[in-house]
Length: 185
Image (cartoon, rainbow, N blue to C red; front, side, top):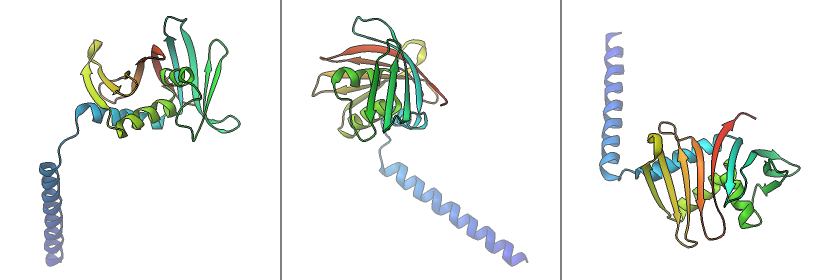
């Protein structure tokens, strides 16, 4: 019985040693991700987990619009944004963007998880510059800059869990700011 216990302890020690060595080699060889890219990736995970967002946003100098954005079947699979002025914007599940720049901006500013998430992911994949800075009230800010269109998409996230709480978009076609929150179904 004693030899079985010794064998088990030796096996566990060897396994822990191998794990520690592998982790040390990985930590030494691979550079750590920049804080902005890490914050953006964490925000993408949060967006993927939430199917419904409520928002208040303003395009240019227009009135404040309240929106509810949900993922589901409407009668096709996709994202549906319903605004307080009665406007409805639908983006099919396989589409990368809405049919026009204003509709795309509305979906992003409303915090629609699929639209905002796919935009941030696409920008990260294309190598967009990502900055994480501290904004008002100590909140980190993810600023994704699109050089080709001279646009800036800023996603405001909570400090600990990187939950998006606001979006700002500044571009040649459309600009605006919003506050968003996620709810269950």
